[in-house]
Length: 143
Image 1 (tube, rainbow, N blue to C red):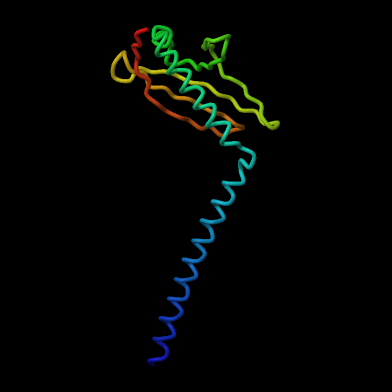
Image 2: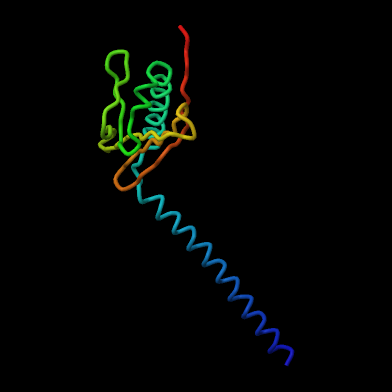
């Protein structure tokens, strides 16, 4: 009788261990599948474009806050360089790199005051959307 109880405990512990191992394996396979979903997505392009937008908007905050303040919060915008100035246009910027197409845009909302803007920068690649957020203060620079 002692052996039957011990055998039952061993079977239950064995099944429990098997369930834990299968759970870990399923989690690993799920992670592997998600990482293969966008195998060609280039994070460096997204990061460099996010930095470009952040730096350009900081520069505009120093020189032309009224332009930033006049932007609608429901519209997507993008930046492009014209001479030594940044120009804001509606829509999204298309960047092609390594035969891949990325779209970048930003939106601006008031934060808690009129002197701080909440900026959302968006990168789109296929059906993947990545967003970056930062606060943009009104910068008064005396020359």
